[in-house]
Figure 1 (tube, rainbow, N blue to C red):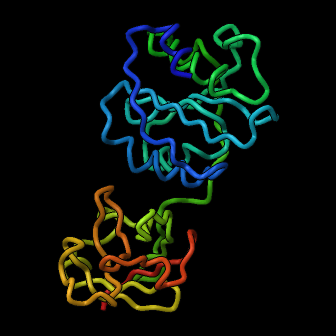
Figure 2 (cartoon, rainbow, N blue to C red; figure 1 turned 180 degrees about the vertical axis):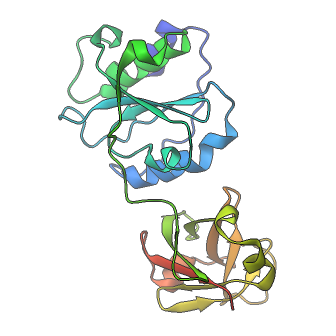
Length: 245
C-alpha cells in the first residue's frame, strides 16, 4: 500500500496509526480512528482497511469531515467519527480509472484505497473520485443518550490492552453541575463513585475501581495496575449508567 501511494505521490508523508487492530474487528478500528483523528492537521487523509467484506458488494467510500478525509470500506469503520461531526460528505468510490489494475478481490487496501488516497493527496477533488451518497453503513451509536432527568446511558466502546474500559462518554456529554457535584457509574452490577485525576492517585487502594478522564477525552473505568475489565467481567458494549450521587 505504501509503495502504491508513493508511486502516485512521491512527496506523500505516510504515518502509521496502528497495525494492531484485531483481525476483522471493525468496531476496534472505528474507536481507534475516533480517538486519533483530532490530533491530525486539516487535509489529513486517513486510510482505514479493516475490511472483512473485501471483494463482496460492500462499497468503497470516501468521507470528508473535520477538514479531513477518510478512505476505506463502507462497513461502519468511520461511523463514530462521522456522527460527531456536523459537516460531512460521503462518496461511493466508483471511478475505476483511479484504481490500481487488476483489482484484487482480496486486497482493496492496495488496489482501491491506497491509489484513491494518493490521488486525493495530489489535489483531485472528491467529486471526481465517486458519486455522493447519503446512506453509509453505521455501527450502533457511539454517543451516550439521556436516561431520565439526571442520568446518561452509555456503553463501553473499547477495552485497551491494560484492561481499561473506555466508555463513549466525554466531558461535553456531562452537564457541568453534575461534574461539580460528583458522578456515579454503574456497570456490570458494580457502582463506581471515585473519579481520579491520574492513574497513580490512590495506589494504596489496588482493589478499587475508579473512573478517570483518559487521554482520548473519554471517561474510562480503571484499576491501579490491574485489568478493570477482568475485575468487572465486562465486555465491549456493556451498558454504563452515569448519574449524580
